[in-house]
Each structure stands twice: as structure tokens, then as C-alpha cells.
Image (cartoon, rainbow, N blue to C red; front, side, top):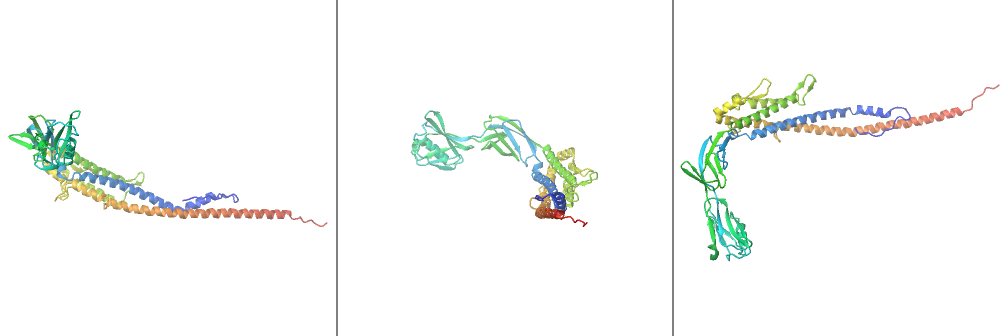
Amino acid sequence: MASTSSIGGLVSGLDTTSIVSSLMQLEAQPQTLLKSRLATEQGTVSSLQGLNAKFAALSTKAAALDTPGAWATLNTTSSSSAVTATAGTTATPGALSFTVLSTAAPAQLTFGALANTTDVVTTATTMTLTKPDGSTATVNPGDGTLAGLAAGINSAKAGVTATLLKVSDGSYRLRLTSDSTGAGTLSLTSDDPAVDGKWTQTAGKDAQLQVGGDTVSSKTNTFTGLLTGLDVTVAANTAANTAVDVTVTRDASSAQNALKGLVDAANDLLSSIDTLTAYDPTTKKSGALAGDATVRALRSAVLDTVTRAADGSSMASLGVQTDRYGKVTFDATKFASAYAADPGTVATKLGAPSTASVPGFAARLFAMADKASNSTKGTLTSIITGHQSSITTLQNGIADWDVRLAAKQESLNKQYANLEVSLGKLQDQASWLSGQIASLPSSSKSS
């Protein structure tokens, strides 16, 4: 409500400023009610947004666990620091022993003559590079200098890198190295016979492991799928005849922690809903969302999703159930026992995707949380949008009242100012009349 200056009761003796202020308070009551409703709506939106954020966080966490593989994780150990192993979702627990025979190396090609970078080493107009896999690439030797030849090889982008080794001042050695490792050789031929015979080949090598009676080869130092779902990587230059033992075990703690994390997130949601919908008989105050049927329905959905499988069976066998306070409990010991007895079934019950005939725990949680918090069609999103529309309407109404009240206050200020002016004129007239009367001659009695 805007304020304007007003003239105090200099003539009347009235406190016109206070009178106008009291009248304006009466006039502003409708706007005050709008402001109260606005504060309530803004508090409701803030509470809904906080709740929506927690549903969205649960949705994100559940989505990351929406596959059986997320619950059937495996640990791998290696007896050698030079060897690492990674177990995928199709791997099975077990042990593997092998011996490193060799590591992979790239093919190399070295120019036999030393030269300065500006020395012309070939008169060839075109050269052909043959790579370890047998494919070829055309190389433009440029101006034929050592530097020009190296630049031409690199410009061909053929998977081969040319470098110049400085042997001494003004003396360089041209070396070609395959960008990939594996058995095979490099060669560079041209229409300049004089240069073709000056190259020294160093063959590339495959990495090799001795596994039982089998020799296993790989063009790189990573043996992908050495066993089903198991990849093994050997560090470059690992000593030959290094013996290695790799062990794959189930990671029960990872699955247990993941399930506990989802249960904790669900309990956090339940606690938030309880706080927002509670009534305190002592203070006689209700939560910001008390009486909201949609929020109460969401609480039931959380509880039902966490404690019951899609086929109606209980999650109690995995240690998940409700207590008498309506919260979810997690028995880690019971879960560990169930996981040890049948890890495959447990992983499926927890991580079966939403497309499965019986969606898993994570898929159900994701669907429930996303239905509430989806940014375009979520239940809470729609409610928040509705309240925000009401807030805009209230703000516009309050702004309209600001204009009306400012006009009303200006009108009252003018009325009381005019009153003071009128009273001042009347006082002046009264004073003049009094003076006139006082100046009249007094009548005398005749003797």
C-alpha cells in the first residue's frame, strides 16, 4: 500500500494522519487476506517442491539399479600387480591360473641412414605404406627431405606415426611405429629403388598367455572374454613367465548396500510426508500439506512399492518389511542369507527390468517415483503447476489493490487537507466577526 504525505490537524487539532492510517487499514483488509493466502500458497509450493526433489532423487537412484547385473556384481582379485581382471554381468565366480608368455608390441620400421632433417633422402614421387594387417596407404614424400618424408607419413593418417630421433647434432634417424600392437610388419616401398633397401623391420608381437595346455593370443594386452564375462589386462613389459592367479567372487556387500540405500531413500520420503501432513495437538498447528489426499496416496504408494513385489509376494524374505510405525526396516542378516543361498534369484527379484513379467524392486521404485516427480506429467509436478498459477493470480490481485489503495489514501489525504483549509477560513471569518462586533459603539442610557 503506497503512502502519500498528508497535512496534520493544524487547525482542527485532529490527528488526521492517524485517522487516515486507521481508515486505510480497514480499506486494506481484502488485500491483507490476499497476502495471507499468497504466503500460504508459497509455503505449500515450497513444501511440494522439496518433496518432489526427493521423489526425483529416488527415481534416479532406482533407475541406475534397474538391471539384474546391478545386483549381481562380482569382485576380482589378481595375485600380480601387473595383471588386472574385470568381471562383467555374465561372469561366474571361480578361479583362473595362467602364465604371461609375452606382452603385445607394435611393429616398427627404421630408416638405415642418418641424415639432417633438411637432407634429401628420396627422389620418390609416391610411396606405399603396408601395415601389419596387410592394408596399404599412399604416402606423399613431399620435398623428399627427411623432415618432409616424416610429415608425409603422418599426414597420411594411416595408423602409423613417424618420429625423428636426434642421434647427434645434425644427425637424425627416421622411425615409423604402428599405432596399434599385434603381430605383423611395416614396409614402405616407392618408385625410388635406392631408398627401398634402407629400411629395417621390427615385427610387432601379440600378447600371449599360457592357460593350461592352451596358448591364448591377443593383439593387445587386454584379453577380452578370456573366460565368459571376464576380461584380463596385462601391463606392458610384464616379465615373461609371470605366473598369475585370478579369483572371481560375488560381491554381496554391494547388493546389500544398494538395497539399503533404496530403503533409506524410501524412509526419508515417508518421514518427509509424515512431517508435512502431521497435526500437533499441543501447538494446534498442521503441516503445510495436511489434508492433502494426493500426498497421503503417495505415502501409501511408497510403502506398498517397497514392501511388496509386483506379483504380490512380500519382500520380507529379503529382509524388507514395515514396522508398527509405518516405516520400512531392512534386515541385513536376512538379506545376506538369501543372497548366499540363491544370488541369481535375488538379483532378478531386485533388478528385473520394467519390461519383465514381474518387474524387480528397482524398476517398481523407479516407476512409482517417476510417476510422482516426472518433469512434464508427474503428479506432484501438476499440483505444483496449479499452485503456481494461483500464486500468479494472487500476486496480480495484490498489485491491483496497491493501485486502488494508493488512490484511496490520496483521496482521504485531500479530504482532510480540504477540511483543514475550510476550518481555517471559518476561523478567520469568526475572528473577523468578533473584531467587528467588538468595534461597535456601546449604547448609553439617556439621563
